[in-house]
Length: 390
Image 1 (tube, rainbow, N blue to C red):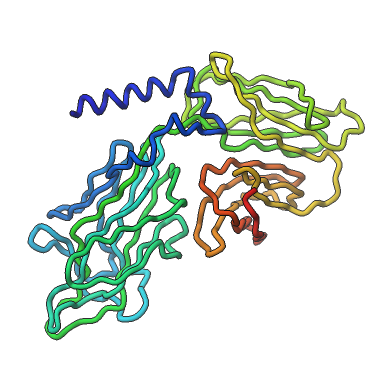
Image 2: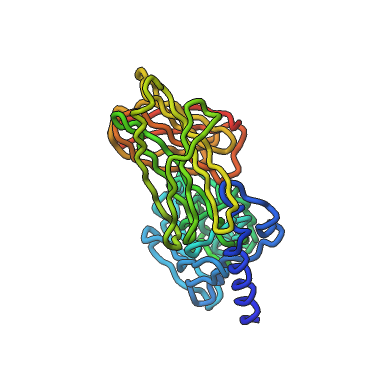
């Protein structure tokens, strides 16, 4: 069985590196990806005298464990794990939790479909049932500020199934979960415990397609600085940089050829359009070409060579985040997307110099109809807008 598993993974890699994989750039073709119905267990913690978990084929997991804020944590009978004492009798205490995490392997991504928590509070005391009567699950995606799910628990074991939502699809980095217990009550002679029997995370892991992460243009004096980065590029892929004065008719101004395979690669090019006298606005795009000659185009970015002080604008169009305008601070910026209820969806980071910039970020997330875009930098600049996903 192990041999067959690795053979399948090897064949999938071969297909990924064939001439067909370049079709994934910018647009993911659903037929090439595993269907959501193929979800399986990608993490499992049994707590059978051990805190380490069992990962899926395409990810790792960390040991589960209670925070230092929980005074006592121990195994019971070798088949369950508990945290004892200190659980708040009122609202949750952010310093008291059970923590576990998953990390996709390099070159892979995870879709988390649901989590199943098998747990109870203590069955000791008179009447039976000491410990937290309520629970909350949160994650590192928003700094553990928003409940993914909440519920109540009794002194009998139950399976609590949680669907975390679209924010947990297409995950490329570690996600940490924290389970909080609160509204604790203790019967006479009872021990205040939150008891875990099993944690199971279901989903899928699969190879990342080649993707253009971002393409940006910025005015620097009389020149235009172009930059872009791609994920999972291969040797001999080519990037044709094209320029237009009307946004319709484009001419190639340079070709960049990839010299190595890379999980992520960043590129930069300086255009010198000084000969275009009288032009106030330029348009740029990339044509990405693979070894067989098949290619596709990036989004178009626009820069104003001569412009007044335009405010920074953020908007979502065709699942892309557009950020344009005059930046008065040379700084690192972060743009975060939230649902209207405040749940984090995704975030991107970028660095700018003072001047007119235009960025377009591809958002590989399922977006709700309305999103809040929050743009901040380290110098106190902050702007939040409500944008409809168009």
